[in-house]
Amino acid sequence: MLIFSVFKTLTDQTVTVELKNDLSITGVLKSVDQFLNIRLDSIKVLDEARHPHMMAVKNCFIRGSVVRYVQLPAAAVDTQLLEDATRREAANQTKK
Amino acid sequence: MSSLQGYVDHKVLLILQDGRAIVGTLAGFDQRSNVVLSDSKERVFSLEEGVEEVPLGLYLVKGDMIALVGEVDAAIDESVDLSTIRADPIPPIRY
Amino acid sequence: MDGVSQGIQEPFDLVRLSLNERVFVKLRGDRQLTGVLHAYDGHMNLILSDVEETIMIVEPLDGASDVPSTVKVAKRNMEMLFVRGDGVILVSPPSRT
Image 1 (tube, chains in turn brown, purple, cyan):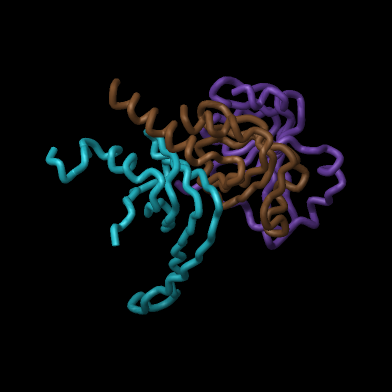
Image 2: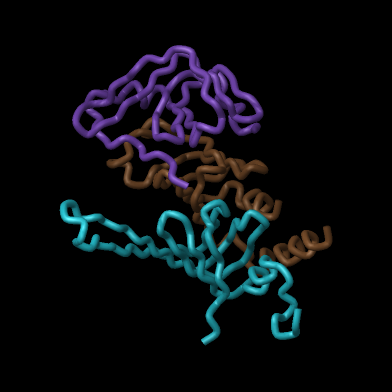
């Protein structure tokens, strides 16, 4: 739930999603759901010459399970807030 | 899976876990992102020759098999001569 | 649980105590990362900053199998990175040197 919330705060930011098939897609984060499925707008595939498969695709839906990494804009991430929220969630987890 | 809602009746490109690329019109989908495509074609990429389109017709793809769904800009897509495109197929998803 | 283990009772406690510290992460696909840990969850999804990724690319030499295959190492830096938990093999706290 924590990570889902983080992604929600990053809506409308530009991110780069690296897939487990080695495709890297940069785009504007439009939405995310509980499975961390991701909607990107204004996308650009890295190394387009080698990957022309998505030339005509301008926005896409990426299944959360095929994501390896998401590169985030560091300026939009409050690391102190993240650490506090993580400790809080960890404490809730052990209480259960 | 509200994210696929905007794509209904639009031309989409599916990239599957095994690396296949399928284009078609999104006829419908469900909660598990199972997808029905109408008038679909597989695009087979290779370095040796241009892209080959294999007609598949009405196709149901299980959500588990899907890596990515992209909305195809019809104008851009139609302006591209697929027979001139040479590229390696997309690699399969490796966990 | 003695005092030396600083209240580490379960594996995730070790990860929690590594928050805001540089950690080493081993991933599937012959990848490894070091970075400062800022968030994690029960799936081992991670958010790291100041990340260096190292990828080992093994190139088997064709022909004789007694010839050792060459290993290429590729490195990359990323400012802020979300890592999906299903690729994580281990998270190791910083070495106290």
